[in-house]
Length: 218
Image (cartoon, rainbow, N blue to C red; front, side, top):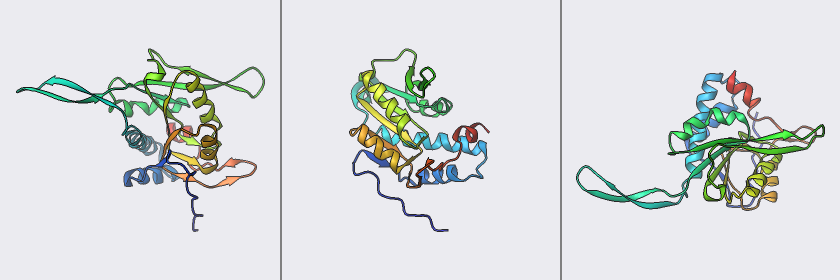
């Protein structure tokens, strides 16, 4: 069966697809329903690190003088803290791989809790010892951007909390979800490994990776 061609990303330089061969190889493993949980966990860690490294290429640096074994040397170190926030708790289990690359990485979650008996959800930030979000590069992680509603709520919430430098990471995003995000937050930077065009008028975006939590934990 020949897959339908994937439409181009929404017309903006802010949507980036990681074209690295390793990223595309990892995405195929995540798409494969026969990938066992152990391999699925390992691959999600690898892909998250690849996306994070791509998304932080533009992190600012500052000069710092250090003593070497023979003299002194002036080089560059990170000039802005990095905060990793997962929209789902599943991301907390993956964040340790990212922490190996970023000194003093701060990790937290944004939960979307039901407010009362209605269907309205209210975002809540769970982050200990956080710097002012306006001083940090905030990496927001949503494993799959389907409708885009959860990501939009989380982004608007952290922007109201002072964040201005925000990058959204997602293993897989639907074209419709990205379009909604671009409408809601036009200046948002997004990094993903793939964009899916499948859409059902009643069910919404198709589950390109299946039940993520179930596959992650077995």
